[in-house]
Amino acid sequence: MEETLVFVDEGLLKELVEHFGDGKRLKFDKFEFAKRLAKKQGLFCKHLFYYTCPPFQSDAPTEDEANRKKGHDKFVNALSKNKDITIREGRCQRLKNEEGEFEYHQKEVDNLLTIDMGHIKDDFPDIKKIILVSSDTDFCPSIKDVRKRNSIEVILYTYFDRERKSKFSLSNELIDCCSNYFKLTKEDFTSCPIKWKNKK
Image 1 (spheres, rainbow, N blue to C red):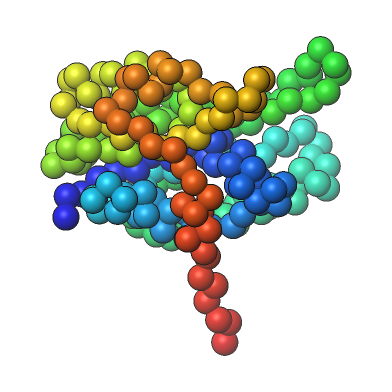
Image 2: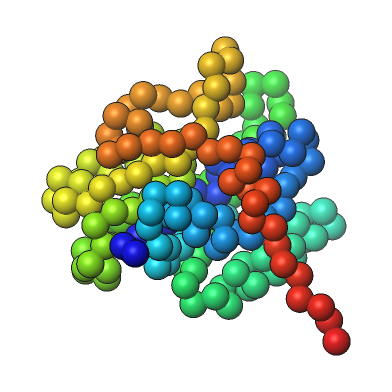
C-alpha cells in the first residue's frame, strides 16, 4: 500500500469535536484518526504531523490556566511516545475584542506546518501524496508550492457548512488549490476510540 503523511491542524479539530459531540468534546485516538483518513484514500499513514499550541498562561497563571497547561503537557507527552508522530507547538495569543471579551488565537502554527511541508522531498523522498486536515487558507501558498515544485498531491480533509456567519465557513481558495477534498464526518472521530491500557 502506498505511504502518505498526514498533517493535522488542531485548530479545526477542537471546533469539530465539540460540534459533533453537541457541546461535549469527543475523545479520539489521534493516530488512529490519521490512519483512518489515509485508509479511506487507499493509503498507509507513515507519519503524523500534529500542530497544536499550549493554552494561554498569564504572567502569574491562575489555577485554571495552570490546570489546562498540566493537561496539555500530559497530552503532548503521551503522544510523543509514538515515534510515528511529530508534534509541533506554536503559542497562544490572548487579545481583547471590541466587546471587552478575551479571544484566543494560535500563533506560529502556520509557519511550522509550512516548514514541514517544504521539507517533504528531503525527509520523505518516496512520498507522492499527503493528507492535510485544516480549514486555513494561510496554507494555500505552501500547498501550491509543494504541488508544483515537488509534484506531490495534497488531499484536503476539512469541514464546512452554509450557515451565515458560521465558524465553519470555508474559502473556495483552499479547496481549489488542493488536488482533492473530502468533508470530515462524526464517524471519522467516533470510529477511533482511545484504548485505555489496564493498570496493574
